[in-house]
Length: 606
Image 1 (spheres, rainbow, N blue to C red):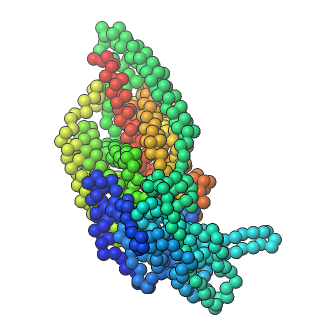
Image 2: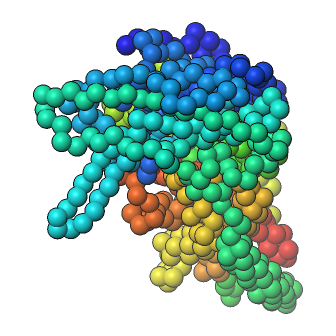
Image 3: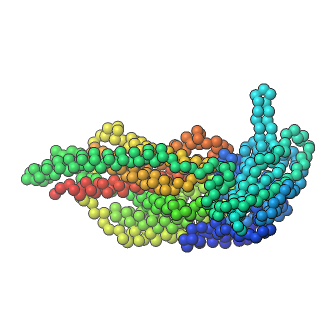
């Protein structure tokens, strides 16, 4: 059996990225509607198979002992389709537009005992197959398994050797496609001796029907008539939970905290006026709380290069996340655009690298950083290196198991080229602009040369407690919505509530900012001026809660199993938690910085 890759595959992936760059919003061959005449051939592509409960564990359809042509010719795929594990190839099915077929023979096969055992194992693991007709995916199970009784126990396994294809058309366009085995009896795979061959005859039928639906998106039944769960409906519990938490937190910060601040500022300024005639050398004498550390609160932190890199990459992912959600709101990602969100994410990541370079270099120069080149290298490596290491492990596991999720060498080279020619240069360019446009830090208070001693802090003001509180509250605001996102990414749901997602994303950022301000105020009130890194860690720890939730989801909310799916799930869940740490840590830091500037600007001092 010879497998032929398509010669246009490399240029096709480049074209998909180019069209996204030009703003067309879709990839070639994905959303284009094909017009047919009666009797025109309709190509059916076989794509992939895999365990139903392991969405990311997929294999080429022709890896199973099934009917296949002598030379396998693959379809040209976009970058998003390749990243999604698609490997479409031409099949032996002969389908013509509006021509019904009844029990046409596809092929005759003689299976050895080893091939039968391969099919039995696939059926026991609930393997499903995916075909594609005119860019419409159709799915069904490879076989049938029946477990019945306890004593005596019955275990029956059968293979579907006949498939019924149902296609609906409107005018000269195909609107819907589905496959069924409703009235078919499976061929038993039980009772075969080791030296015996099993003879099979694969057949298929095709039935066409006209529909009044004019567009695929108007069809309510979905793309595969319920093989996977239906599109998620609006979940008001998540929205109400998030809104209540936001109102409580914003109310806490705006009413309680601002009232306390107003009293503090009035008391401190009054004390300053009454003691202005006294000794100016003992300015701090008798003071307590956040005013007394005014000469240390703007003391630059250690590891300032790493801090600036975190802020730069966090700002980049804030822009990336917002961009992806906005593109989804514009209708650029739907069930008929295979892997479009993958292509868009890669393109946006490369283009937003200028943001990470600018923010990191700009703030690094403001706080007195001198090693500008090292800062740029650290910024560009802060996410790309952990991602590359994680991807290398995951891709190696897929490659060792023959999964279609393992990227081909041409795709790897393409992604590396995009990063080297777009991502890294934009980081450097953004860094140059950030360095040149940076002004002085302009702190409201002068910083003394000798740092003030920090008094012992109670246990509830420790970093660990702040991380627990600052991470749990933002996580609780998105916990319900997080289940639906996990069910979409790691399950079989279809997520289309992008407006709700944008709303919840805004809530998450708002809660993170409010919590950061409150925790920073409590820290400064204890005369602890080491707020720089604490503000990043406190709300950034939400990423740790998200990873812990992923462990809970894997163990209690999913049926995933096997080394391939487990490695991918935990590898990318760890990266997801890391990305949320960067994003929320950035929001937390700049919120605290804005708050601290505000309170010290309004404080009267000599």
